[in-house]
Image (tube, rainbow, N blue to C red; front, side):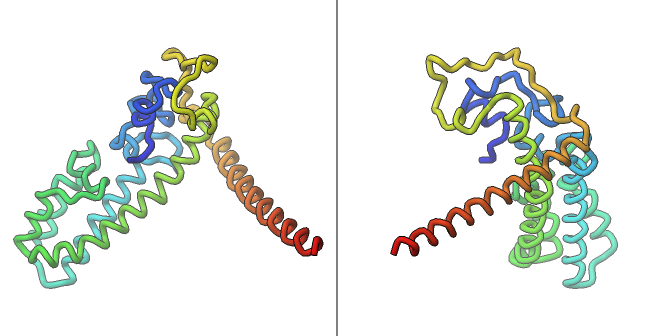
Length: 223
């Protein structure tokens, strides 16, 4: 299960107030469905627009793949395009099932009018996998960077997350604690933060490598 905010609120309510909303848009609870459809305002980091783009690409790739197998009537594309699973505007529940790597029954039922089930799975499985990889790379990884920054702004440290619960000396988070939204932060600030974070991680890796080299050199100097 992805460590989205609603999950963390259930696991560690002493750190994550049940009243907190999505750290990116601060307009709705951050559950698994909201993760892919959050209307975050930064154009380069907008999960909602990215989700719609990838759904449309997955849909078009499916049409191209199935059309390449045999000559299909024009009605195939027309009917395929209006299937409920491609409704990313709302989005529909079946669209969100695709996002979870689940094939809606009405999609396979429609395709069975044209292809055997074995062919359907053979064609659609790699396309669905590619769709999932794109969502992971374009939404989930960016989300992780922003979410960790938001945790830091709320005073939630790595050590506090390891602990099972609040100790007698640890304050329980107040439900009135200010849940600042990432949507209120200028884009330049976040681009700068992400860049510095990447550089810091690279420097940490280089530091670890150098420490290992020094240990090896000290080992041979000893002998």
